[in-house]
Image 1 (cartoon, rainbow, N blue to C red):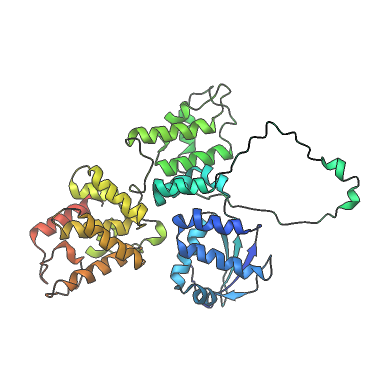
Image 2: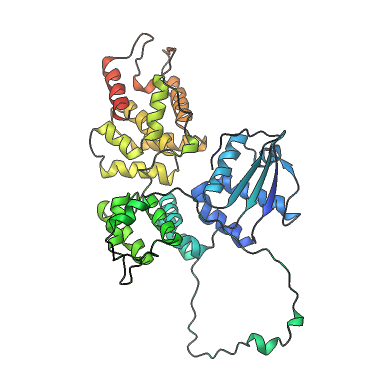
Length: 421
């Protein structure tokens, strides 16, 4: 749960090991998780793991300044990395208020490769983040070679043939390998969903915890609402009134691909994550613009700029920014708006790649940060700078005066704000 609590360098923490961690887990973290959660989140996980190594189950007590020193990162960036680990099921965090505050971090195993690629969310998000070529390479790296043993006879000894007395064993309580499930709010209205299915065809036990979890995951990754999910579920009921989970996966994927020209889901329809949004309540023009950037998907933002559907080429530009380069949705919106204003409403590929690469290297993740760096870039090429009491993104009009914007630019700004408010 995201909580607005103080987080200071002097706050203390301990790490508790809730699982068995191996060198293969390190490999999986880098290969499978890092493209999704980023390098700092992986470094934080490995640092917490290292804090455990001397004491195995429970670490000694550290301050968060220790993490700042090791990771060479700000406390705010460490908090964002921690939230990424929590969201993807690698970490549980507990908090106790005090002077200083105390935190407990429970460390859980990453999924193994088989579990990861079978997960409908992880596999699709990884595919979106690395692209088809890298995704296929990763799958091949984890493939298990099969041997033809049909001409061999198995001669493996049985347990009771080797061990004859239970006195040869000692009983003890050992830590097992534990992974965390993904926690998320319901993506569909299950009451409406179940009441919309034909009575008598669905078993009372059809919607167990596992099935609901799968429906939530599929609804999230494929952006499917309750009524659309009802249509899909009708096709996956078996003769006993239960939901065939594999059929549900397949039909959901087919439904999405049918409506998206055969493509797998991308991130172009996602908005800025909540933890990267600005605090609400800023009613200035600048604040309203930031709100638009944060609460509009890159696809919808581009539609608003074009007053119609973007071309396939422009959608590929969005996919490149969000997937290949890894910009956040709000930063992508700022970049698109900046480039269109600077290039006569054209998405210049080379210009976009140059700016996107720079912003990625600078670690720009929020709309506010992106607007600030865009303004600085603009000022390098515009010597006639004018300071406004209520600063607007300067690319909205290169000839802004202190008194007013042009009528055209005012109309443009008004249209954007009216569309999303």
